[in-house]
Length: 274
Image 1 (cartoon, rainbow, N blue to C red):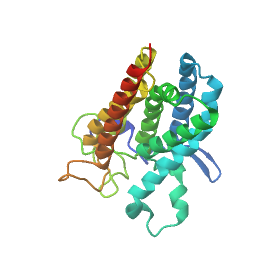
Image 2: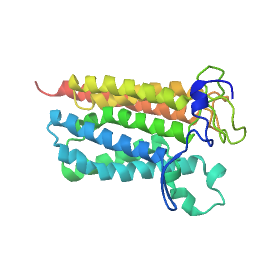
Image 3: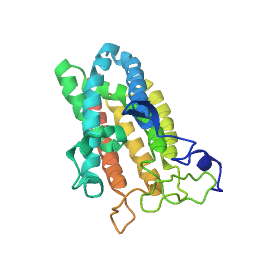
Image 4: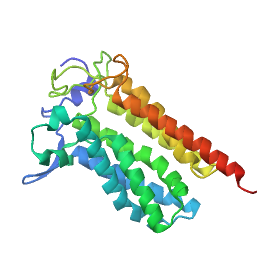
């Protein structure tokens, strides 16, 4: 292989990089799984420290962790199974639908599941939902950074063909034409998520009303995801004449939701007596 390099260092299924980090007999721990766990732990910890500003205790945020884990994983896996049912799951054992340790989690499904879990938890504990959402928002981007690093090592969510010096190669991806040079789109998104985290963490300290930081997250990530989707090569289906991916459609919905929330929360804040 002659391009690089980053691509040479991360050519898979040779002696350089193994997707499996640890093995205990038949139990295998992948780098993808480690990255997801790291993202969850770091994200939850930073959110617990941030929430103190809004008088939400770190313990209350920590207790939310189990709810987020169940809702996020269930939503992310369900979305993936529905989206890739024909290609990966039809006619196979139902066990395959829950084998999340192999990868196969869709962020938008995880966000939806985690959002529902947060709503239910806040009602159960009597916590202010929008204050809690604001505290969590920057940490979603931070956790997603780790997740995309895991995707990069795992070879999922891969990019389109690339002729640039930093192209990467996987010996088994794409499945129909493995070994070709691809955009490291997972790293593009990881970098943008770190930038988004930095911006949101600063904005949180200056937010003007509850819900603003969360709304800005939806707006910001909608733009980030819509942009990087132009470099994604793992979709079998496109819309609107072939240019729009399912992720871009979801990004548009996310952006619209963020805009609606921002306008609504701003108007409500303006009506409150001073």
